[in-house]
Length: 305
Ligand SMILES: NC(=O)c1ccc[n+]([C@@H]2O[C@H](COP(=O)([O-])OP(=O)(O)OC[C@H]3O[C@@H](n4cnc5c(N)ncnc54)[C@H](OP(=O)(O)O)[C@@H]3O)[C@@H](O)[C@H]2O)c1
Image 1 (cartoon, rainbow, N blue to C red):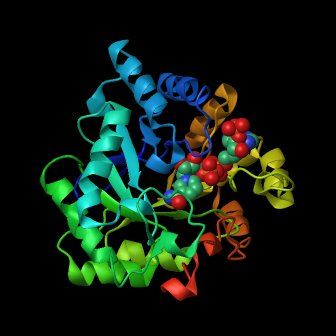
Image 2: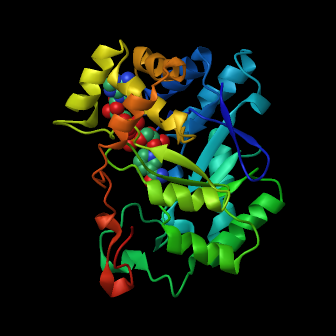
Image 3: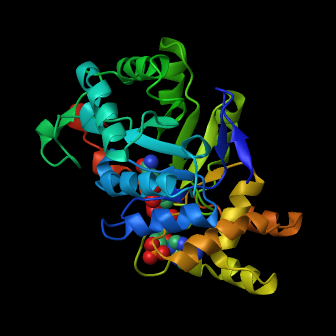
């Protein structure tokens, strides 16, 4: 499997299994299938509320000899309600416990948003904490301690724009290893990717298939569907291959064995320069997650992206 070398020198598998909206009752089997198929990278988060079941699947896969811990790359994410200095380590320890792991390979600050302890998605004004009270760089400094103490092998960010990353680069010691952001042909993120590359930060594309949506989706985009038919592959494989060929890590989510397999097999699909150019031309800066659910100007959150 192709890997991306992080600024810690660790190798991050270029394709991983996403687990957002993978329901308890489904995600155990999805992780077991994925590991048997060859995935070595699982993308998790505390807010997905399914880490316990993922932890059981990882545990069973290791005990049954499907994989060794050191071959696996497990990511988890610090939720917004745990940005306060005293909350960062307990939140990480809770994720380690749920995942039945002694260390995480990567721990991300999930959003550049601080919230009141115990909140999921913010609803009332009290749920937001202004970044003047808990600045991102103070939360990051606590994450640096997790790295220095060996609880996590790398630290990174998610949904960060250039300004947020620059703040960390200026005010803290350890640069982020990864920025995980929404990315697909309708949101190619070329400028942010160039900025991250310049700063030796790897980029992971979330929602690489266009996210879990009803109605018309990216997987039904005519250009992608026609191309898939012409080169005898599938729309999902085109979307994933396009990213991997430009050095972007992908974490497609599925709980279906055939799709987990199909997505993994995208590593063997080679797009030629002409087809890459066609896909490059689809960019509309369109977000499926536009961040408005975190905006609250009264609390200092004007624009997330
Ligand atoms: N950092 C963040 O803020 C953030 C935000 C969103 C997502 N993420 C991460 O990124 C991962 C992926 O993003 P995502 O879950 O939003 O969306 P995605 O992976 O782009 O798409 C998932 C959807 O596509 C379907 N699917 C998967 N493979 C398919 C295939 N080969 N053919 C047709 N349909 C297929 C899935 O359904 P089935 O399961 O039924 O197959 C599901 O409905 C998440 O799971 C999560 O780990 C991170």
